[in-house]
Image (cartoon, rainbow, N blue to C red; front, side):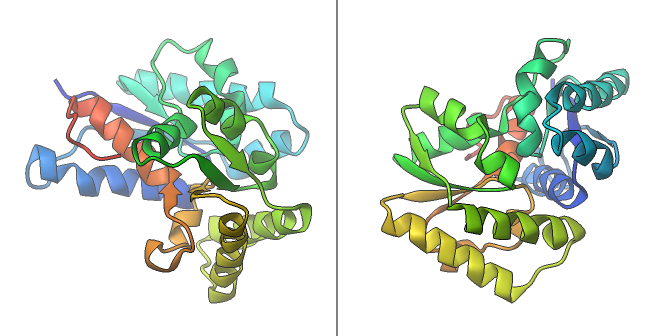
Amino acid sequence: MTKHIGIVACSAEGAALCYQTICREAPAFMGEHNHPEISMHTFPLSNYMDYIRKGDWQNVAGLMLSSAQKLETAGADLLICPDNTIHQAFDLVTSQSSLPWLHIAEAVAFEAQFRGFQRLGITGTKYLMTGPVYPDKLKQFNLSCEIPDKTARETIDGIIFNELVNGIICEESRLYFNSVIQQFRDHGCDAVVLGCTEIPLLIQPHDCPLPPLDSTRLLARAALKEATGNSLIKG
């Protein structure tokens, strides 16, 4: 029996891409116009940012858990969060949640290991790039990672919060991201993690200097696989 997917959303553009990916890719395995039942809940991004800027991950977890409880009431069987940054509160959340969760960085790590990558460049918000979410998870898969220098981190963070979360896509920003990814390549990275769920809206695989690991779509596919029990789903 197909499971009901609950999406604990944070920022709109990334959550929408995750939702769309599930709906668009499911028919190949489930039949025309078919996909698992999906529910989504989110508090305003501003609520999250108030706590993130203070490093208050306990209250970030509180918001996530409140969304989770609403989704459980709506009938969800499993939960995902298409936001990399707030995964820093993931362990606080899962220890108090009665439903199973999928971890976005674990979905990325599985894909990296499957494709034979060993050293990953990490892009995302400044909180994500300097935080433990990816280093801790990748270490479990014997994978290493690298982050940009401080200037690049601040620039990337600005692009995310001033442009991408607002649905603004700029060519200048795309070229800047690619220049940072080229530096990863020059330093020996063999793939790059698009570790903010909005970055896949900006970076295109065909001209990216490294193979991109699209955290948004990889999480969506992991949820689709879990919900349907279909081991043929790639990613």
